[in-house]
Length: 314
Image (tube, rainbow, N blue to C red; front, side, top):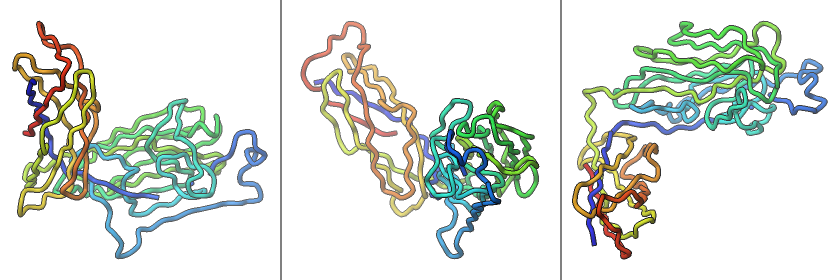
């Protein structure tokens, strides 16, 4: 029985979790011809309730805004939809966010005129540095619609897309956030009314970095060894906690497997090498899936019996 050591390289970082709570037309329907017939409108507004849970704070990681709590929002046709297109006037009636044929799992489906406000306060002193997002008119309205995307930082205009229609190519926003405290995402109607103005903020992300002075103390451990066979997948449990008597706050990290040099040791690979492990409360446990796969070290013939893996954290 060979014993192998796997050393996950752990990058500690404070993380956030969040919550958030859309007008669309169905191609081919009679409503598609004029969704605002008779002057109908379905405006929607949201303000964070006084005394409620405050905004989730951004962490030293790549934060997806559709997981964030809004400070306030408004929309021209039904609720803003997180991770869906705007849809119609009901909540949750949107489709997959799609720009120029490309689907997006995360983002916001909005409708001109709309606005969303977010805090850029970082957790444990994390400093937010960049905003990135793909923008465009959702494919569900074809080549129709005309909107203008704008980004305001601390009340000052930092980005203006100019007029975009359903026929426009997807654009990418990449803005410096250093020293800023509030983010506002706005969509206007380009001055010609709001018909078909389905505007997507696709995969909007805010990157933040740790404050070098932050006092972060986390403990990472694997409770014990595992038994597995070559060619199989095995799942280890990683436990993360604060050091005794210390509260560091939320955590996010990624793992790496370092290959060992002991003769005859089995190779192992992370089944989810790009996964970000995150928790807002500690202690927390995470399943870590490992594959025992080829290639094997030169001259090594894998045995047919079980292999014991001893996992260590660093």
